[in-house]
Length: 175
Image (cartoon, rainbow, N blue to C red; front, side, top):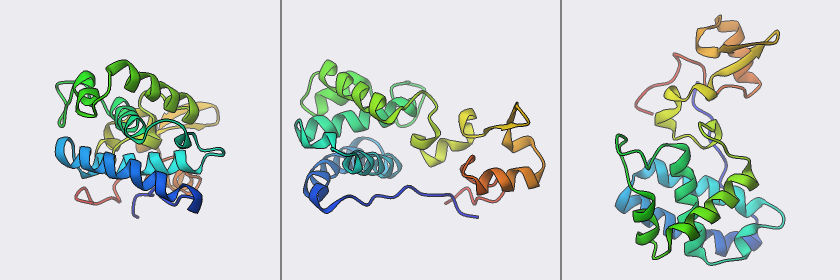
């Protein structure tokens, strides 16, 4: 069974602003990160564009773009030098022509708006999903369990309910 993907649809009224921001995140990810980061950044931009009212209407597109990359990077340990790809937070801001505090503050706004925390499975790169313990925690009769280690029928029900990202053992690692 394939991994579930987030939608990137945006309201017509937000399409131009979304396209401006995504052009910046795509270019940054292509040059400094990878296609996987670009995809998750597009999904986050679409989520922000669908909010009512959309916060993307205020502020500069490059500030939003930098903050989106920063937010996705925070969830995926982009600023940890042991990770690949890796970039420092101050370097990310500098490459967008912004201050580290501007990017960090806007990133915090995004985290607050979307209720994003560390290891947030909704914003984890697909290649890091297996490493994310929060993506696999489910409650069975009040007991928190790792879904990768429960009987298949429980895994199937957890997947059907959207509690886990995919059925363990059913995803081609090259996908």
